[in-house]
Image 1 (spheres, helix red, strand yellow):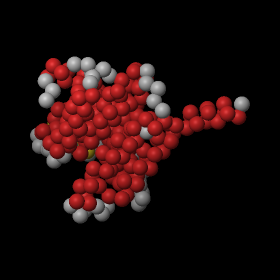
Image 2 (spheres, one colour; image 1 turned 90 degrees about the vertical axis):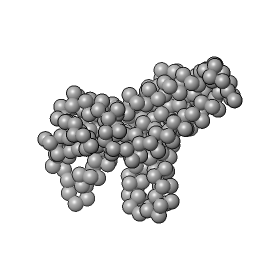
Image 3 (tube, rainbow, N blue to C red; image 1 turned 60 degrees about the vertical axis):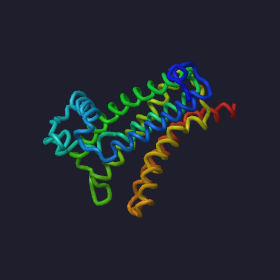
Image 4 (cartoon, helix red, strand yellow; image 1 turned 90 degrees about the horizontal axis):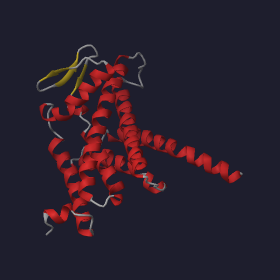
Length: 243
């Protein structure tokens, strides 16, 4: 069994395995602990997210115990569904497992990944709240594009773009020259956690109906944004090849 000193020491195969197990354990623990949590238990992430939306987006949000942050002007409630816990978990796992190989101290990178993911989640949540408030009041809806559907699509796009942004910011900072396969890590982690885990739960409880539309939209948005990410390099390579 590894001692605390050995765990904090420079990376060894054993410490890498332990740190990886801790990353998975932290993600599972957070998912289990906060999957059914109320607004009061999620204040640690709802409060700074709402403050950011109020400060940057000018959204009037007032805290109501047990309910969350309410905007009477925009007729919206920022509650547990807006906490972005799934995004926090996805971001944490993506960062840790994508770049742990670059760190000689896996424990330090584990903590850094958690902090970076929390900051990214708060910023993404604040942006999502601000955009959702504006979209909710927009006169753009019809029989096909409903406010709820637009809310879901905007949230997916904001979270996925935020994941790509923090991933490539860290890659650039570390001087990482990842190949195309590794650059698919955000897409794979996003799909696995946002779709794979809920689908497994619904299948287990025999409640998978109604999930197909959500999955289709998530995959369509994530695939489109991922393709857009690769497009410049593909075009540049083709131009160079023709020359």
